[in-house]
Image (cartoon, rainbow, N blue to C red; front, side, top):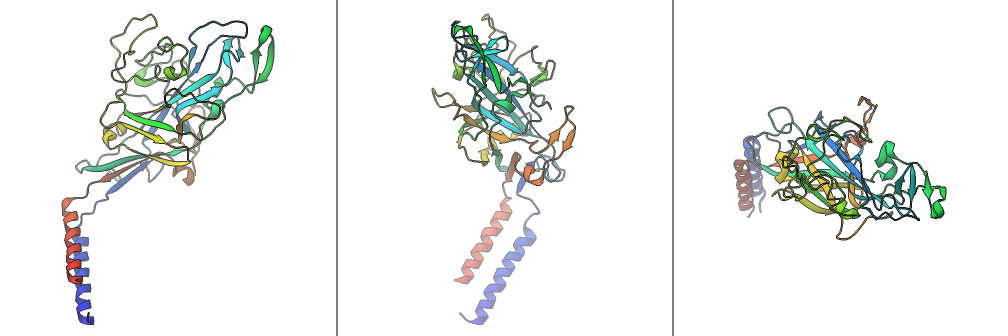
Length: 386
């Protein structure tokens, strides 16, 4: 090829690129939303937790044969709005179980805990700076959450922690002071599910044990109202796996919605999430540290609205142990921030902290004209090069 003909090719290539640069619309194709990044501060997440003590009240001398005890220390609460870590899964809580009177026994244990959470990103769509235009199709929406160590028993329980040593009632009804064998923070793996929320959630700011009168989901209050699925242990007698699904928000079609302890049904109660929604997500996530990704394209109206419900599943017939839990734990939208008891910010998270908070990434579909120009320019260059 001569120098002259090569120059023509270069000119043609430059011309095609110039046309693209002039014609292509000034449109950002990817939008990201993360609490504390680029002025965005409209993300919210909040956690609920409950525990189940198997064979509650049993001792070496007395087998009650009861159904265990579902603790409600945060069962009805969505107060975890200042949590640094959002647990989701089935966790081993402690070896001993409660028998009342501030005492424990091996026979009344073990105790498990269950954690779920809600998350949403508000004011994503609109005409303001950084917002996603409402008249353009979405190609994909991805929720990224940074997997980290779970809270362990001590942090998860907050003010309800029993202490490092406890009073244990042993054979002969002899009381001794023994170590409180509890789960330590660890990385976990499990099947994570994300479902649309069907009810409004009041996202609280408290971190730790719920207190009487705190606003929870849809203005429900702990001790006043519960979720639509009432948490009685009778549907799953002494079954820690069953208890994981017989407490907390109720699914569409759940036969236990509104069933009271005496068997009566409150017909006014309705489901709070929908696991059969076409956009529902169910995916296994391993125990590695770092961001886990979830395709929430089909849930975009929910995650930018009232929120989505994040839950987890254990393998069939498996229970967590001191060494193995089933789920993940994610850094929250408050990761790195510290607050006082009145929710006043004391110190803000570092840039490194902020970078690992939950992230919603929205990718738009390019306009057809832009795609056609790219193809035309490429074909022209190839033809001339031949």
